[in-house]
Image (cartoon, rainbow, N blue to C red; front, side):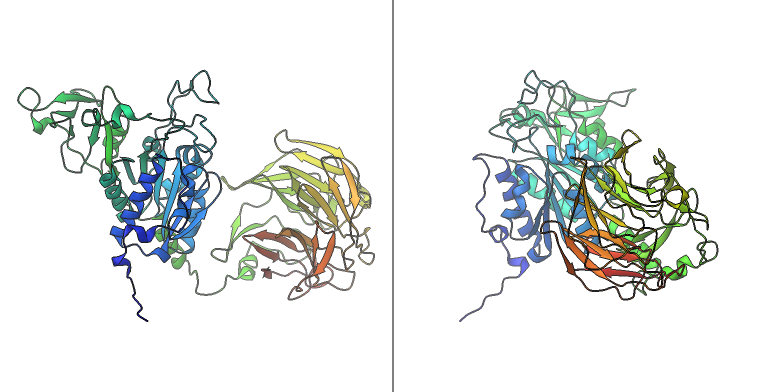
Length: 596
């Protein structure tokens, strides 16, 4: 038997094709772009096992299936965010993003903006056919005024987005344009984009033969292309036409471009603008050119490299000591002015980053609190009620953390004061259950907070009033788990489920163990409950509830028992934070992580 080894340098375009049937409409411009990408990869000698294509949703999003590289077919508009995560996790990978005008500039516009301004080292190819093809022809962000479609039957009245103008405005360091059928130019631009270290944005005008056929014919058709296309090249005059007989110059006394004849009957070539791809102002003028008054500028419009995001991030992490030793939460929490290790409450707040295994202090709470549940509704963290002082006074406060400005803001107060309650979020609303209130009496009312209206309303009361319970939400249902009737030696195993849609409570299978002072978090479709206490002991129990089967199972216990702890999940990991390692007011800075 003879074994032949093919190196990356010997690969040809067909070696980058997968075994999947290519399923686009006959005549679709995507075929041409796929061919150009495969050719560019072969000419680059790209390593297939170190190359990743990431797409969102749309016709173009099938791209990863058709390449014999790694690939992710992700969710609508989020390809830039997922590609950023891939690049940060392994900067040695060669990561490409494939998107369309709808996917990349509508639902994904914010993600596109941030990946460009951050300058993450990705190659981004945006297929622009000025229509939503996959969903049968609705107008898109780049559709021109007057476009008739199922969603604009009388013609669109909106002004379109210019993809390259958007990229420049977002701070992109590399911006280029091509036409799908001009294979040599597309291949050359993809190779230039690959050579650029940072976010490279390439817009490809791509014809949709079914829903927007011929939309670019006014400048791509062979009979008009010489007079309607300007192929820019760094250091070369900006001339076009069948015989390069026309050119661009700045209109005297203005900052506007004009088309002028070149040569004996016109302007000397020396007066024609010379393309400088490092000049952002010139690039902004070029992307705005449109027929019939001007040609469409194609090629590398702007290239002015800067250090890429992931390189700067890793350099910063190394300078901060990332990877040298585990982060010491105890040292952070125990430093002067940060943490009070008595039974006095604190206002200190901290944020943990699993990527760096590091903690940082954020803005303090408006006032010290303890026995205060936290919940995330939408993208906002809320701190709900809680107890103040050493006298355990229940409070009505609701605070929302604004991460963008590192500030806690006051929201509408709870209908009644309560602490040691449970809180979870369903449908963007907070649901608060149980706890103790004024006069140290159990609170049975269920309170629901609507962030949009900044209002509370009361809902069906909890069947078994209790404090020191845990709450978690999954599939639109809030589960109130465990707790006690103000007495640590009378813990409950009760599990009750509240459905906001019907405003009804139902009883579920009880916990395997009776616990109060526990924590709960959702992971992989189950509710994980950890810790707890009696008056004289603490629990290391870790039990998991499956809402689908209404059954409990026992999972690996905590390394050590604790109560009054916090629990949260992130990226498939359950984090158990702080709490008390002994009954009473003992405190720990321990953080444990569990991965199923």
